[in-house]
Image 1 (tube, rainbow, N blue to C red):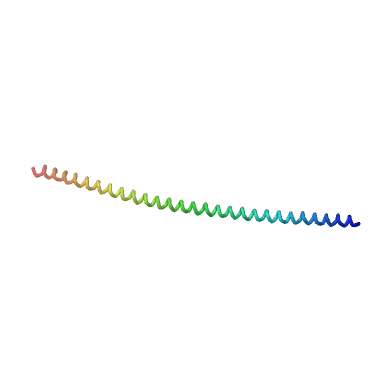
Image 2: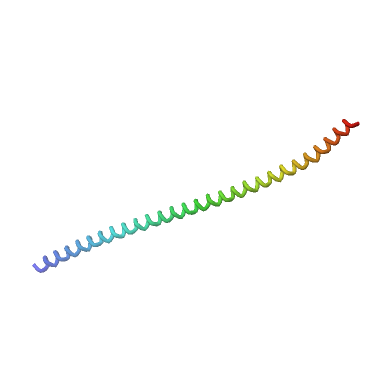
Length: 101
C-alpha cells in the first residue's frame, strides 16, 4: 500500500515537473520572441535614422553642388560678357572708322 502511495506521489511530482517545465519553456519562448521583436524594431529604427541622415546629407551635397554650378555659370557669363564687350567696342570702332573715311 505504501509503495502504491509513493508511486502515485512520484507520478504527481513527475507531472508537476513536466507542467513546470512546459510553463518555463513557454515563458522562455515568449521572452525570446519579445527580445527578437525589440531587436528588429531597434534595427529598423536604426536603418530609418541612417537613411534619413544619408538623404539629408545628399540633399545638402546637392544644394552645395547647385550653388557651385550657379557661381561657375555666373562667372563664365561675366567672362563672356567682357570678351564680347571688348570685341564689340573694336567692331564699333572699325565700323565708325569705315563710315568716317
